[in-house]
Length: 133
Image 1 (cartoon, rainbow, N blue to C red):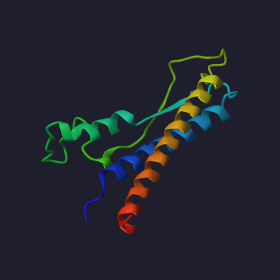
Image 2: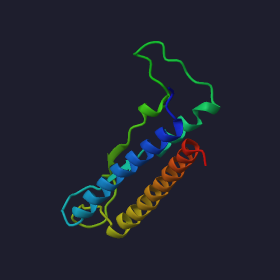
Image 3: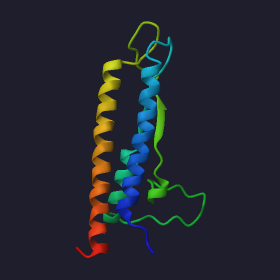
């Protein structure tokens, strides 16, 4: 049985958002730590490339040393956490802006909630098909 692509996208999106929640909570917890560099989690570009790969010609990797130009499969999508060191918010070299972090947290929360509702809607559709309603 082939796995549903949409469920894989939902899973990867929620995984990336959960990692973003962790990074933002660490940033907020260390907002008064001198020298702390905030962390940022990105995964959307990778996920978008995999979703749009059906519209593009897929590159064939014939040798393990070949480097694909972008993620080829959903399993290749991994959230990337980067340390932002080239910004300064305070004189003690801490670059965590609490207002910005709360905005990022709110955005991630809305996206996670939307994905949860989408998954529930899809599950409801499956339930309707199975019960024959």
